Length: 122
Image (cartoon, rainbow, N blue to C red; front, side, top):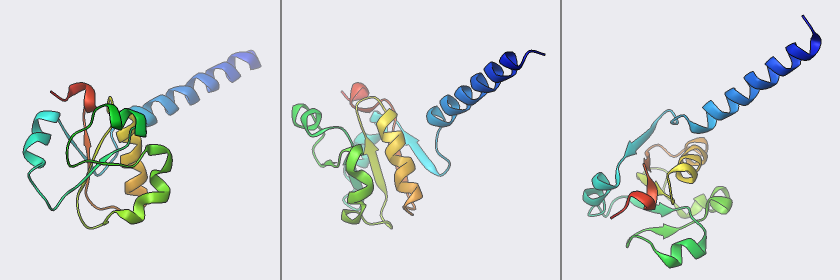
């Protein structure tokens, strides 16, 4: 077999692995819909984090959510309690999934990603 074919095959497999890893749900992260979020908002014992940019947050956000952009989340986790559930939202659900991974890696026990993000919020 030609060495270029082997290299291309390995490259394709590596890229597929990256895509699957980035888009698959994180183990230990709960997933809820924006409909389910509506009942969760009444619970004062939970932490609500919006990981969009400050500009996106100013334009439209859900009352009760704190804005901690994904780009600085790993440096700002000391503002959050690792023992209380953290619900994370973004625009579409992609950045909040990445944020959920960050929180789990930093030892947060109860992390919930809001599927569909602000795009699904009515």
